[in-house]
Image (cartoon, rainbow over all chains, first blue to last red; front, side, top):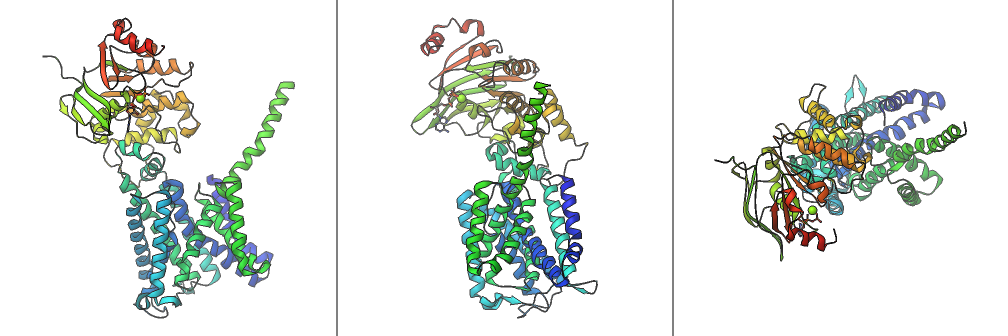
Length: 338
Length: 249
Ligand SMILES: Nc1ncnc2c1ncn2[C@@H]1O[C@H](COP(=O)(O)OP(=O)(O)OP(=O)(O)O)[C@@H](O)[C@H]1O
Ligand SMILES: [Mg+2]
């Protein structure tokens, strides 16, 4: 996506709460700001970590929601005011960096596994890992409060405003998403990012050129762990807590669905997919009964993968060339006859 | 005393299970020499290349590079010592741009390879990558993804990447294979323009390409060296005629 288009999208997102306020009653505008756009941003960040890995590294991991959950649980366990208090007592200013650090380390650990495992095997291993962590959280009372999880993680108070105040939550999420998105775009043009893509295209050749393939793979998962960790902190505050269900099979697969719907091919796909997912998840339930949501999202998923393997973003990219083609043909014909 | 050979292979062999792909090859390539390696399909030319470049170790024999034993060195260490190569089947980074490919090749041979800092305008590696693009006549394509290039342009890029490590010996595996007649002269002119300080080892199927470009020709068959002679004598050599005419060339 061009820089100009990115800036335009960012400007629209900046103005969105006010535009929504003009278009609909306040309560509804607030719902859209937090529960559609805000939610799309925070889950989009988690999906961004997967899109980054898949697009530039060629890895598909099902453990990115788990890594996000490690940051979420980390904050919930450490922070003051969470219920029940496990360790407690820490302010958000310390608990949040600790949670993100834990997620980054977890990412590096998965990276160490990915050095030797790829493709479907990596998918299976990360799936098993995700299941193991959520099962462990479910059965462990001392640290994770078991099935119930940890509640009342409301976020810090910034400038005297509680974090869950709709506009503050939205703009904080937007700032985090924009910074991480820009960070990914910067990173993939650094030597690290270029080597990562080179390894994706041809690991043998990259190694022959003198690059340390294992080191770059592990670092890529560390970066993805950091991104997912940031998303995990925000999703936990969005949900006012965390439970094993937030990192279970369904949640992990949802991240994959978001990334694929949006398109593995450009990081913006994570947010596009996340927005589509949030809209469907919210409104399909009222059109349909709740249980059919999975059928619907499954069909949407299938449709998009069949029509455009690189997702909605890939589809949008192809539209200009589809439109231009007939026009060029016309121009050529005009030139011939003229 | 004659100068130290750029490459010296002594009794080099490689087995793949029961298959003896290369056997008892002894070769001396002098500095600055242009050496062509000919031979029918499956003669072991590419395997011999891979042994010299360090893709896998030989099962027997010794390889020396300017007198230094490199038999056990991994591929990237040999690249850094000054052995550049191209591959028979093009091995480029297809998802990246032309300049990115060259930049990665330049940077691979140098320290500070792992970095999160974007190269600035004056970055010396980037400048060198631009220089290589110019030498390979690819400047106008610098920003294009490699997947857009024609077959001939891909070959030019391959040679550029092989030159990135400042090689003393350049190994080219069938550089002209599959090129259209239009692309061929461009690449051959480019190869002929390489300085004599560079030693060139060239695998070729096609005698018409190999002979004018080389000082000495080695013909391989069934993994072993069959004939070694100058280009003007090779055509009349009875063994070579048997190998090539027998194949209908
Ligand atoms: N990695 C490998 N594992 C097993 N066998 C191999 C391997 N590489 C090459 N061979 C075999 O070794 C023999 C020599 O192959 P090589 O590629 O060196 O021939 P070549 O002279 O380069 O042929 P061509 O002209 O077709 O490129 C062939 O029989 C091939 O199948
Ligand atoms: Mg070959």
